[in-house]
Length: 249
Image 1 (cartoon, rainbow, N blue to C red):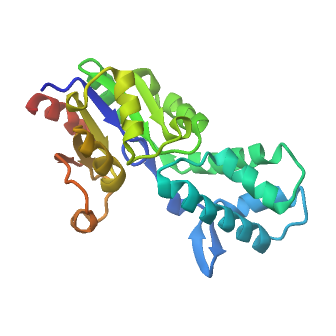
Image 2 (cartoon, helix red, strand yellow):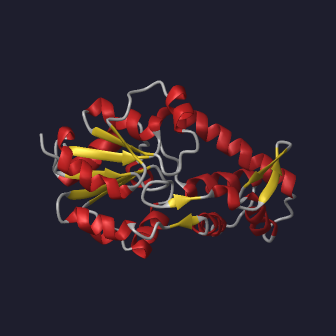
Image 3 (tube, helix red, strand yellow):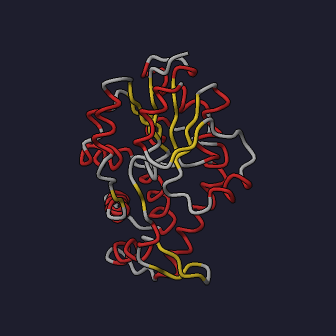
């Protein structure tokens, strides 16, 4: 069956995200790249909450939501996350969760780089097939703004972002949503992503042909050995290889 649509993951597929360049802060005895230091400064301007207390509450909230949301494949919107943090801290400031969201997402946006050939690649592909996005991300507004800044959004016919859908990859529903918007059957689509578990493991059981992009994978063999799900149908290093796949399948 001919390919009529190509669906892309966002981070480390269409754009690159280097979280290791965030400021490092001590959490649980380890220094890790995080936005938590900047978030605490925002909170401290509203209430006398020390850094240790803030990080403890943030960690508690994240642990609770991992168990109740992410473990079930449900998304946690960033705004809701910070609403829970502010509530647990007992701060009466309705505007604060929005400010924390803007601070956090601004710092994440600063870690994004855009491969210079990707806009042209999408433009070329859009003349041949329909294009979609299927991304796990907790703040749709930032994702959409990023796509506009990159010039990518104009080439995309369908968008499925977990913040808006409420479901995260690898659950089937988010893939089904983007396929429905594209108007194609699973076997008429390619899904391209960097995550063997979320992208390949989620798309393959639906009958979507899968493409593992390894541009940002440090050790491909180790990643494949650790992966217990279906193998990708195709492996590429650069998005420029997609056009050749369309000719071959």
